[in-house]
Length: 218
Image: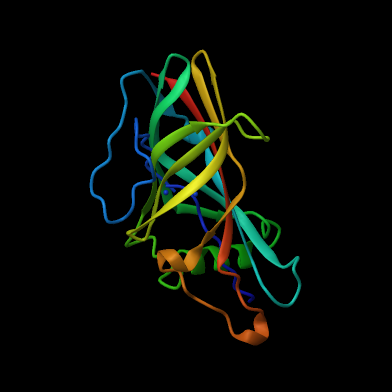
């Protein structure tokens, strides 16, 4: 079988704890152990049934159309809203929920790929069942297609790296929606270094993720 990388997201941490800082000048890094947050507003719980991380992995050689894509679900999470604006949040992705979508009509291959992605070659979900994303700063954006810039830390396989995501954040009464722009992360930064033999097509290190979240007021 042609084995391809995915990735998540989340904790999009694409799996993920999301926490928003109230005044840091830059994203938290793995060298820092504390996060300053502002969580004084109303709390909204993540709707895990209607939230997900979408992932896509692909090859350098063979065909550029050769790719696998799928989803990862959230285990839990919450956001805080104050004065109608996103103030903080916390998300955890369930890495065991990693699912392939493009092979849905080939169940044997689908199952084999999912098993491989969950194995020690990739995400080691038995050892690392969750991924996390912590937001350290939220910046409103005036230009472009996205209204918010999210700085924070993504944790996969126990490795934390700073990331920056553009997002559309909408607060409407009892619900908060967050939809990030599709963005690449380097899987090798998080210890995911498996490669197929060259004749089968080299796996790209960049994995595309998009985080889609719905949260309901508690």
